Image 1: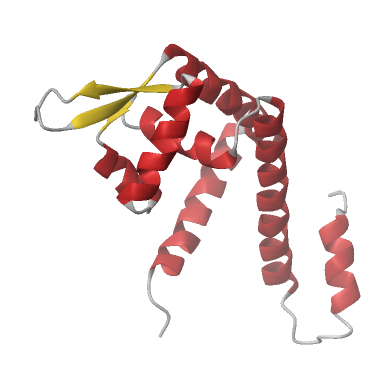
Image 2: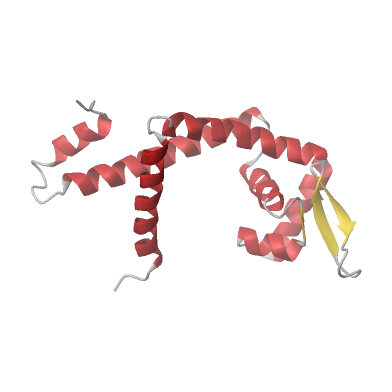
Length: 165
C-alpha cells in the first residue's frame, strides 16, 4: 500500500471544488513544484552556510562546467547575461580569490577567467551537499525506476520545449 503525502490531501481537497480536475496531472505537477521548492531551499541554505551568494555560485558553476576556464563572453552566454554584468561578477570573485584572470591561449588580446583552488572548493562544497540531497530523495526509487522517471520526464520536457499551438 502506498503512503499518502501532503499532495494527496491537496488533490482530495480540490476534487469537490473542481470536478474536472485530473488527479494525476494535479498530483504530478504539484509534486514537481514541491520538489523544485525543496531543492531550491536546500541550495539557499548551503550557499548561506558557505557564505556564497547565488550569483557567485552560478558563475563558479558555469566556469566549472567549462573545465574551470572560459572567456567572459562564454560566461555571459552561459549565464544569459550582458558582458558588463559578467565583468562585475568576475571582479567580485577575483576579490574573494575564487577566480583569476589569465591570458587566453588562443587570442593574446583576450583574457580568460579561471577557477582558483579556493573557487573550485567553494563550488564543490555546494555541489556535494546539493548532490547528497538529490541522491537522498531519489534513493526512494531503485535504479530501474530512476531510469524510467528520467525517461518519462524527458518526454514531458520535449513537449514543453515546443511552442504551444
